[in-house]
Length: 315
View 1 (cartoon, rainbow, N blue to C red):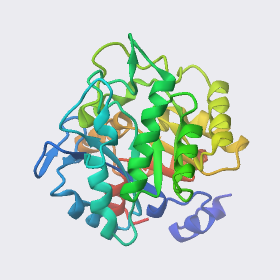
View 2 (view 1 turned 180 degrees about the vertical axis):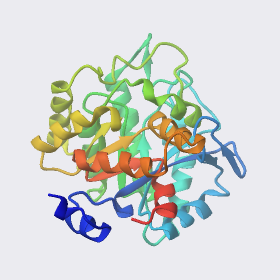
View 3 (view 1 turned 30 degrees about the horizontal axis):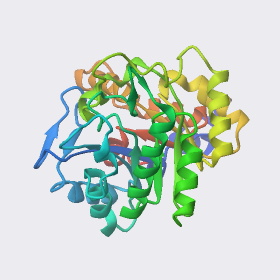
């Protein structure tokens, strides 16, 4: 077997997994309260962008070879019902329009309410719990506002039952049949989201999200969630987090013949990047981590390393 490994050229020839920048999706935080940029303290190298600097940043991502970015908005106003999430002049809607001049970069708006509700939860509260069906009505409004702004893919992430079917029906009824749904199908109630919650200002004001996000102990449940989303019209399904849930990803790949995304989340990024920056890990650890996700079965990877890989490790 060593004949397959004797030089870099030969190793590349026999490689089974290809890490390509075309398959990477860069998360981007856009802040309605901000002019310029603001670093995220818990995520070295990651910043929030004001609407004034966002178009230039997205253009730089496009120039680096990245072909997709997923948008998270931080609004100037929050309320009980998260109404800014579907404001036609909201921060994400403006961002989608601002990206309209780009030639190759696809912007994918995350569709949730945790950044927009004053509770920090992913839907409309009924007491201390999220009201499933009332939240679906808001999700439909958000999806339509994104489509009207020019989005070609929307990414519902709230783990609310029936969200894919509700959004698909709303889009189709409004004539947006071409808009795809990237569904956060198996989104776990993970401890690995803390840096994201700083970046997106989305920490719950009370409690947690375990009543709607998935139990980390379960795999078969994740497969049922994916199967439901596919039946409801999802074009792409997702496993989140990625590195701590490679077994779930591999099980999904062996079972479903549909495009699968994996989201390597904020703490996965911060742990590795802090290790690289401190010298405890070599930069090659970044490549190895992302390759492991593709090897596990992902067709595309959402990762905060996308820009770093595009600029520092040509792939």
